[in-house]
Image (cartoon, rainbow, N blue to C red; front, top):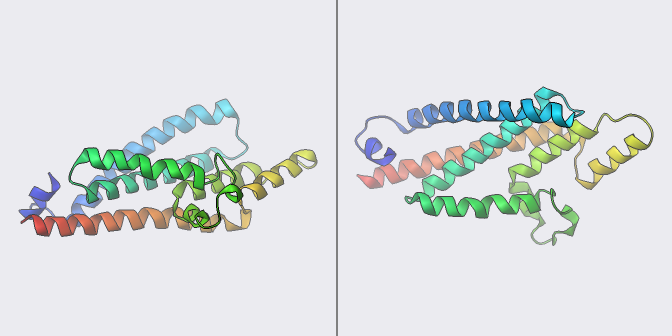
Length: 185
């Protein structure tokens, strides 16, 4: 749909991306808000509601940016959908959610820095475990932070990485679609 309308100059690529981004952001925010409203009080997190909401919303928007990027590469939606799994599943391993990052071979460990889930989980760990009660609980919290390479002093780096990944995928998708639109004519 986009390529046909773009090739006929019905709208510009920037207008298209901004309008779709606004719609996707609203839908993602409503979904994340409902999830956070349910999960926050059921689990009784130590982090604030706003911290949980912001981390999950940022992760959701980064995931939609990856989806838009994959969709821009392929003209067939089935191909893009099937490759989405290949992009998402490795994030669980490289982010340290299922296995410790130290257990990943050193030659491939660099991939953790390309995964938005890495930064979102580190933010969640810092928000959840950086203000524990003194005593054994505090020692356990420090151990969890150390095992997951989550440094409270690096919170702004984690946010910068999430926002950076979002923009890298969105802007590259915009350039890919722009090129395809010019070739479509």
